[in-house]
Length: 224
Image 1 (cartoon, one colour):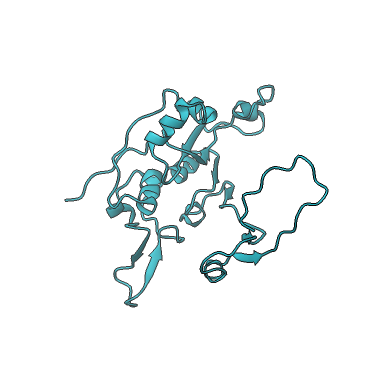
Image 2: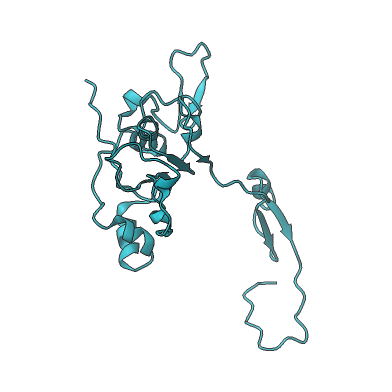
């Protein structure tokens, strides 16, 4: 028996997606009225709405870090905005992100795992990754917001660039590195550089020389 839709609830975990109503006060520019340049969709337009997601970060960890004062901005955002959601099964980024975005269960939005076989495909080994373009089979919150005339900005939300119909607002993908990660060591490491090469990480071993003429240098913990 198919379970019904769950509400597309907006209280969430970490910033990656924003539905921005036309008010620059969100960015601290209170002296400028955004509606002068961007008309409101209707007289009922409310305050800006932010949809967050932080895969793998549990509410328990957030509460603990917030209590220590380590998450001041997130603590302010969550004031009066916490609630609970039923998680889909299997519970992973591949199913939970689309469920949060659409308010539908995996059986309805069609994304049933991180990577899964495409049933009905003529190719036996045809697989898909949850963020592949065109996989979402349910309506989503940002698409509905744009149909209602709301400006939408998607920042770092996997799969947002592949929605059909596509979002008309800015869609900013994940961060792209412009340099190679690397490992620099002054002592032998087991199975290196083979492990580094297998993961596409640069590896280099150097020989340290005594720091002659230095004063007040910190103690070295290198075995070299």
